[in-house]
Amino acid sequence: MEKSPQKYFVLVKVGPTEAGGIYDAIMKWSQQPIQGVKLEEAYQVFGKWDFAFLFSADTNENALHFVGDRIRQVDGVVATTTMPLAPMKDYR
Image (cartoon, rainbow, N blue to C red; front, side, top):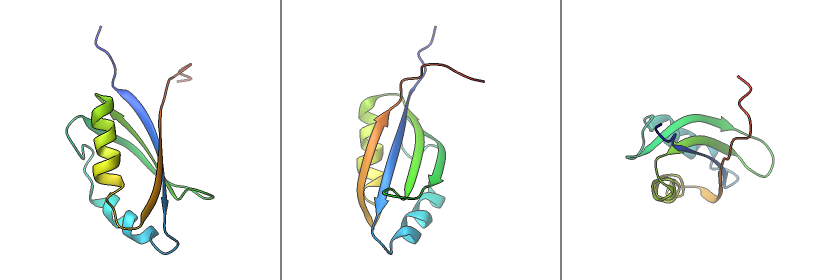
């Protein structure tokens, strides 16, 4: 049986006037922004964080590269937090 890629949820905080910059950047990303990473969903959220991304990666190293080399490099990003997801139950 083939192992499923690990899913991750990353929260992104941007500077007070920087939301447009990350929005423009993410609209240009492909579904596979780097080798081994597949974007699944992007969200605009409210409160302490501004954006959130659900993605899968074939290795933790590729997940780290995506967050560090793509997300954190977008002008205006001031913080990220990344959570590997461990499913407990599929409700579909």
